[in-house]
Amino acid sequence: QKEVEQDPGPLSVPEGAIVSLNCTYSNSAFQYFMWYRQYSRKGPELLMYTYSSGNKEDGRFTAQVDKSSKYISLFIRDSQPSDSATYLCAMSKGNTPLVFGKGTRLSVIA
Amino acid sequence: EAQVTQNPRYLITVTGKKLTVTCSQNMNHEYMSWYRQDPGLGLRQIYYSMNVEVTDKGDVPEGYKVSRKEKRNFPLILESPSPNQTSLYFCASSRQGYTEAFFGQGTRLTVV
Image 1 (cartoon, rainbow over the protein chains, first blue to last red):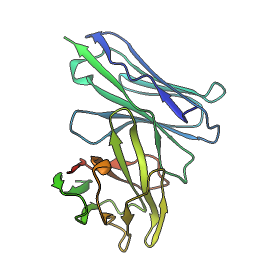
Image 2 (spheres, one colour):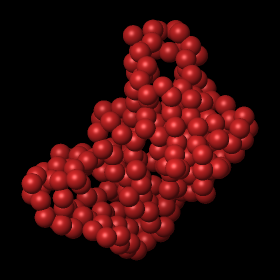
Image 3 (cartoon, rainbow over the protein chains, first blue to last red):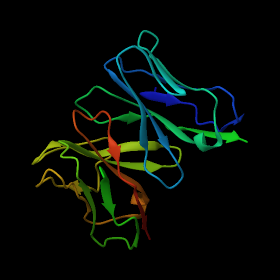
């Protein structure tokens, strides 16, 4: 079983839709959970960061962590064509580098 | 502007010819790391460093070397590149632990 599982998509939605992206993981030692956005031919950029369980909201983005289920989610409200990118979940124990999911490619169609 | 700078951005080389990819950050971050990104495999750790002169192997260190002689620089060295090291490479830095990492723009390496 891979440490972090993420559906690669691709996922195609109409503009304005609510997008749900998620990852599951197997290592209960992970404490830090992140979502990165990666545009084509660019480096990943940090979108959301959560420590331990709970929800975090930033504008149109909401990150959720359920440690009991080993499941994290990213919701995008009122999706825009500019949200079209690959979304990578990442997690860490803190003292070791990030372990990434393989990424989900999202297309938001105007 | 806070940034992680990698050079070169693109490189085509031949098997066995030693090369170095440089990485520099201007945020005074303690932690730096190297990843490679391959289709279907995602981002995988190569080497990481939590401070000057302290480096550790990641998941795929074979064929790579690193050094951390200054806090801001973390070069990746391929002593004898092989075609299976053709990949997209990213350097990252972070202030506390390896979380909230800032990534460089990437180096696309092709070994023929």
